[in-house]
Image 1 (cartoon, rainbow, N blue to C red):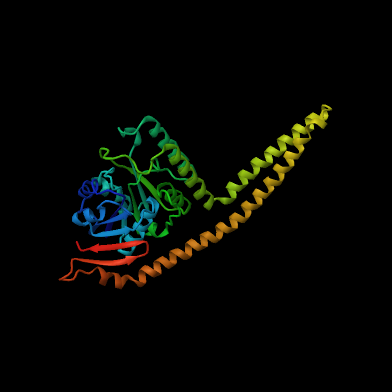
Image 2: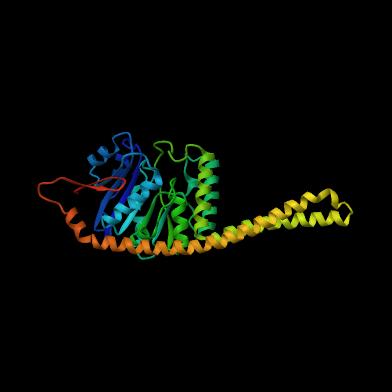
Length: 345
């Protein structure tokens, strides 16, 4: 059983040593624990620090591509490296690495495909009251959209089984946390959560630079991913709202007609007609979007089969590639989007 702990990093040269030191290298039920750093176009010496710390695998982007892209690249690299379980943690040492055994326990027991670390945000000292309220409200929205029971949906401390990692496809260019939970819920993957500890704050969040912008982009992600999986419901609700507006204006006009004042309210009829037309068009668009969603699900199934075939065909080559040779210390392979270094443990 092989566990790979992936750490997406952007200029984490100062905090990465604490993060790496905090990760246990011996875990009951796990034969091998390896580390994977995804350097998302850092301008400092994050990659060099990772090598000095003995990190086995490094994926480097030549330019900053965002947290979601770094996370997705980490999953892909970990799968190619033969990971049975993948744990994601942050490079700022926010999460207690000692809780990794607790995090992966439901997967080892066959009870879950994905485990989310619950930070219990109300207990985090450096979170402001408004941030705690927003975190709770946002998690509630994601729970409704995904039909899951995850209390801390923005937590980046999470574990994935190999099967779950194969099935997830990150399409957002901002953050993966909300998207992957909604995807997993719609794909009927088994999700659970465990309480985890957090470490003292080492730096400000680079993802939440502006609270209004973060809320806007998070809302966009939730609506976009939910609409991917439930397009008919989204479009029907929007269409019914437009139709309801049309009915209200129609009844308003009829009321004034019966009062003998209909001539002064013709604009209500015009606007009502526009709303009726728009409402029916939106509902028809929902039917078309639902058909497209069926094709998307078929495409996801094809992509999953391709991933399995590709990994199976390269299994023997991967074993040879990762095998240590007496006179080599590091081997390097080129991957799309960056350079992957596999340093021997």
